[in-house]
Figure (cartoon, rainbow over the protein chains, first blue to last red):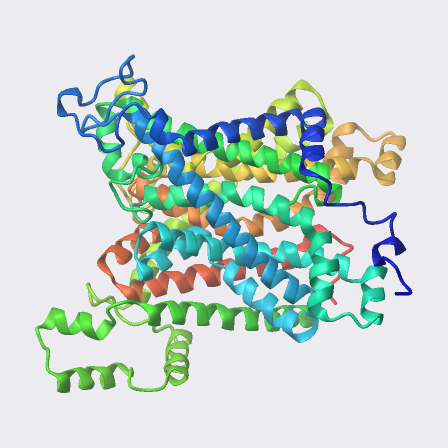
Length: 300
Length: 316
């Protein structure tokens, strides 16, 4: 081939975005202390989710009527609820639900964002115009209102919630991927590949996608927090994952709230966990954005 | 100006079209369709009756005909009748919309009056202790779920001091004080969570503007710092912040749904949740449509407001 590597045509503009993960981690700890702290907190919650069965001292739905409304103690570090269920165990298993919803939902959302964003941004023209108006329309509906209406149609349940959240954030996030693709599309190496007769799929896969990867990584990270928060909001309204699943949102929901006047400790842990997880993943996302792509500052 | 307005409105049309299709499709996708529901309620089950009801509701026509009929009726202000109360959906919406609107406006006022002064302060004292605290606070507020704050406000004051927020709804025109007593707590919670993003944006924009040449010129002229900040910097820095307020409209409405639920405010959010649990689909789609259209209109207004704030933006 006459042109050896299209990338080499413009080495100064595109810094290698696919640096090894290890290098990124080192830079995170060296340059972005708050982001690194967020990453560590998030990993702790992730570990809790993975090892919830081992860590939980009791079963999540183990009813113990003798110990109803026990305040926090050695035996029940976070107290017990109206059925004497151990709050610590429920929080740990709730972490598992949040993490599954967060990872799968954010993964799905990112995949959808890539699909729509890359097609719309690379092809441009009329398809782009129509797609963008449809995305505008979709984004006119508040997340929560859209979620409530769609749940009214498909009914509550974990798979449904994950798919809906994936779709919701996927379509909204396609805007960001599209913006990045449009910026990359006009680079010389893309034109070089086009003039060499490379097919559209090859250009998308070999040239466009790797160069919007930093955007995608940041998008995925911040979406984990958004998805977890939305699922908690839905479960809070009683429209998320149905009981007795120990979700953090449902532990704060209307029916649970009436018992908090007897056991105020019931109000603390679930909300604190949601806040911590979302906060940690947000600061991690912010730090990754600064490290990977300074142009994306302020994106959310 | 008129040409610009016209163009903006034309631009809005395809978006509105897509939005109405989204609403229509969700209405059509509803499980256990409306006919089943009506037949169950009225204790009729013959196949012949089913066909008659379908014909009466226009459900025997092809989908696109149904869509145009529905959209035509919606344009004339006819959103059908509530399946439970048998009152026109438009009347129900007209009763609830002002309540959510009031909550939204209060929350927005609180958000802006917190966010803009703190954002400006943060920018003027960049990297000071105060800047650091406000920045951490704003990142934190993005993560705290509103429904948790609401729950805490409901539970702890009542357990500790036997104080509970006002939960009995009174119309503003009948009893303004009682109305405000109920609205103020949810408005503060909602306003604080909205202020986080606005605060960040104000700070970033102010930092950018304060480095411009015309600010140096203004200072060199000997203008007082207050005038430089208020007249020269703030006015230019606020333009992107206004856009942000438009973008936050969906967040505001979503947050209002949760606050209405916690603080028992009979607005659109509660209407929506009740309608969902009663499977009152005409009401669900009515709320859906009104909310979507409002967000689009708010964003249009935001675009138009640029002309007031920024003389550089001339409507072409």
